Image 1: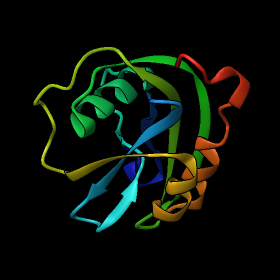
Image 2: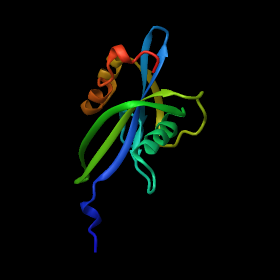
Image 3: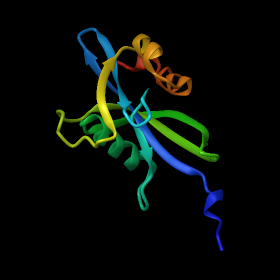
Image 4: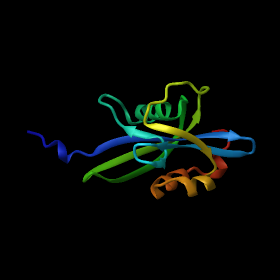
Length: 140
């Protein structure tokens, strides 16, 4: 028999970027259940790839379909005593906002990296945001 408690929780998410005038902004979400600000992310569903999960979670939590630009990095931590790994990708908006957000998020905010530094509850996610080189972020 396989001990399911020994498995790693797999999750994926995205850093969704947009141009706002001459500034680059990214989407951060507020989850009412946890009362925290974070990047959009969620657990990998059975039969789903990491990238498919990241795109689905960004859509469900922000309302935007996205296009993956490049891998951003990963974080890991314990969740209720179980290891959890989250892979992230930098993304850009592919389509206009649609109304398909799930009920986990009660607010989406577009912020600069500097604003994210003050708002995000998890330092590891801030490190993921900063992995996008400034000279290569234009047009993403």
